[in-house]
Structure formats: C-alpha cells, structure tokens
Length: 250
Image (spheres, rainbow, N blue to C red):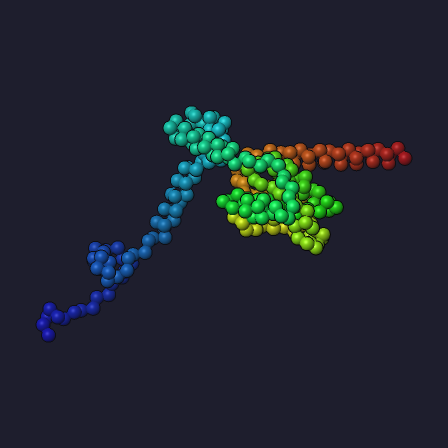
C-alpha cells in the first residue's frame, strides 16, 4: 500500500465555522451548520417590527388616514387610501340584505344551505315565539341585520324546520358557511342567557370571521350598550335613594 492510499482519520466538529468545514459541507460530507438561535431570534424580531410598521395603517379609516398626511409619505398614504376605498366599495357591493328573512322548511335549502356558498355567512335563528330568549334573539337579529347588511340573517320557526324539535332547545342559533354548519348554540346559555347582549353575538361573528374585530360598526354598538348600562345603573341608584327616603319618613 502506497503512502497515497494511507488515510488518517481526522475528527471534525461540524458546528465550527471554518474554511475546511465549508469545503466539507459543499461536498456533502458534513451537514449544513444549523442557524444560530440568536440569529434566528434577531431575524424574527426584525420581521415582527417590519410587519408592525407595514401594517400600522390597517385599522385606520379614511378620516384617520387624512390626519396622517404630515407624518407619512404621500405616495404610501395615497396607496392605503385607494386600498381602503376599494375595501369600502367591495363592502358596499355586499350590502344586499339588511333585514331578517323569515322562511319555511321548503325554502331552507335555497335560502340557507345554498346561500352560504362562496364564503357568504348565513346566520339562522330556529325560533319559538313563547320563549323569552328567542324573543330576545329576534330583537338582536333585527339590529344585527341592519348593522351588517352584508350578512344574511334568517328566522325559521323550529317546529317548521325540524319535526318534533324540543322546545327546550329553543332558541337554536346556527351559522352556515360554504354549505356547512360552522357554529351552533342550543339556547343562549353559553352567550349570557336572558342577559345576552348584542356585543355577545358580535363576538361570535368575530370568532367565525364573519366580521372584522376592527370594524368601526362594532364601536357604535358597544357605546350603545355602555349607555344602556349607565342608564340602568342610574335607575337602580335612584330607586335605592327613593327607598331610603321612604324608610326615613316612616
């Protein structure tokens, strides 16, 4: 055996960043050096900061964009304005409902199942007129249909929808998308029971991506709820004071 055929084993640390290791990696003899955890973290943080900066205008409406004219690049700001106008136009084109549709069983497939195709959410109330929660949900449905006319809200008496449907299951709330039920509630127990508010139902719509959590229309509804809570609190305090005065008089 010649000296040229004689091979001496050499230990190599594949994690080292050396010229020799680069040659071995190029030949496929040792694996590629794993990225540094510190480098990965730095890159992730840089991407997060970059995304935050790029998306800083996402939740702003046209009035708020106008207020930023002195702070943002004009071309960049105009691009966002055009984008927001396009979104508003698209939303306007989808505003084809605006009311609660009352249907019977023969209409169900067309008005609900088939209507939910092509990413069009359909929200169904299987109702029972004698149920307090059902009447509450009917009231909320009217408000939601007005606020979000791009969504389809449907009411059908439960006993006309499913034969012998238990009254104890009413109201039943179903949300269809692409011909499938993606969410269902048997009564309003999980949403607040007899005290279910509009914003509880709005949160459901947010969770199923039927509406965006940054939608300005949500703020209006929440302000209305806050005003109602404030009026209720003032009424309770007034009643307590009046009762205390009556007790003092006695």
